[in-house]
Image (cartoon, rainbow, N blue to C red; front, side, top):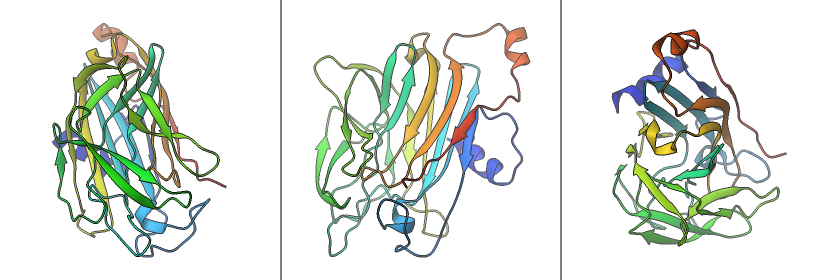
Length: 248
C-alpha cells in the first residue's frame, strides 16, 4: 500500500501533478467541539483529504480523516462511525466496504477480509449501535447495493447494505489505519483492479462519516477500459475536479 501513502504525502507537499483528482482540507487538529455544520463534532468527524490516482489498470484511493476504525465512545455513545465509499459510474453505483469497530471498543488497523460494519446513528449523529458483517467484508467492492442515508438534512447515502441483487465484483488491497503520528487522523488506503468496473466510466466518488457531518467528493471521468499507450500519454498530468462540501 506504499503507493496510496505516497498520494497523501506528496499531495500535502504539492509534489504530485498526476493525480486523477483530489481535495485537501484540514480545518482543525486539536478541538473536538467546533462547528462543522449541521452539527458539532470537530476533528472526530473532519474529512481532510481524498485522492485518486490511476496507473495502468490500477486505481489507488486514499482518504485522510478524523474518523478512526474503532468506534470510540463518550457520554452520548459512539464517536466514530465511518461510512463506505460510493462510486457513481456509467453502469451503476459501486460501493466499497470500509468497516469499523463496535461501539466503545478500542480497535486496531483493519485490512481486507475483516468483518464489515453497519452503524446505527441517532438523529443527532451519535452512534448508538453496530452490526458486524461477515459477508460484506472490509475492502469488498459491490454493484447495486442499497444505501443507508445519514440522519441529518440534507440526507445523503453514507452506508452500503448489500441485498439479494447485489454483485460482488472483487476485493481491494485495503487497509484502514487507526492513528497517524499526531493521533488526530486516520488513513484509508486501497488499490483496485479497474477490471472490477466492467468497462464503466467512473464519474463521482464520495466518502462521508455515517452522521453525514462532512463530505469528501471527487468528480472526474475515469475509464475502466484500458487505453492504448499513446492515448494514455495525452492525459498524463491532467487533474480531475474535486471538492468537499460542508453542510450549511
